Amino acid sequence: MLKALLRHSKHELWEASDGGEAKALALAHRPDVIISDIVMPTLDGYQLAYELASNYEFCGHSFILYSATYLPSEAKVLAAVCGVRFFLTKPTDPILLLHTVSEVLKLGMTKREPVCTRDEFLGLHARLTSDKLAEKVAELDRQIAGRRSMEAENEKLVEELKSAAAGSETSVGKSDILNPLSAREREVLLHLTTGLSNREIAEILFVGEGTVKTHVEHIIRKLGVNDRFKAAAWGFRHGFLPPESVGD
Image (cartoon, rainbow, N blue to C red; front, side, top):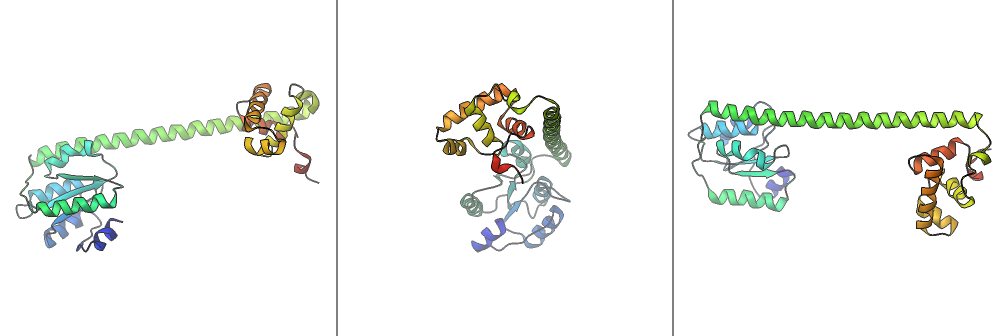
């Protein structure tokens, strides 16, 4: 999107696949503006900006960091150390992107050398990137924990369904099992087992959607299950289906 947008605006472009190639292209062609991601192979965006700003012949060229990984609040200190004044977060509105490039070009070349030594830069860079890595690892841990929790819930539901199926073979008849349910609640349960929504059930029974919702809540409570899906599974496992749902 970025490349197509800039070409459509009649800008001459050079494109690099990593930070090392970007540095070589920048030194060879001396572009007026460099737009760089932060996370790249060989040299990341911070390292690229610092290397170019450290080059006496190149340090006046404008640099825009364009990233979905780092927020401006996280990157502004290290970006400033590298002589970078402009930062855009992906995704960026195309109009804002073109406006930023236009403003950068209007400013022209301004000598902006790094404001710290290479050792100081490396220390700041290591701290920021390690913090970001730790954040990503923590996020991944949370996602894994969430998936494991979901898997545990699914396994629990499968066991409950198996127990319900086994119980239906040895328990008393269906009329005794469903005795706590009213006649209308039994009708609603019939349709729950086919996966219908409250609105669809209401249309079939010629009642209000709120009325169906109340019946469903009563069914869930009386059957001792947690939600409408488990109530439907309960009814299905007990063979409680509309006549048209039963095979020949």
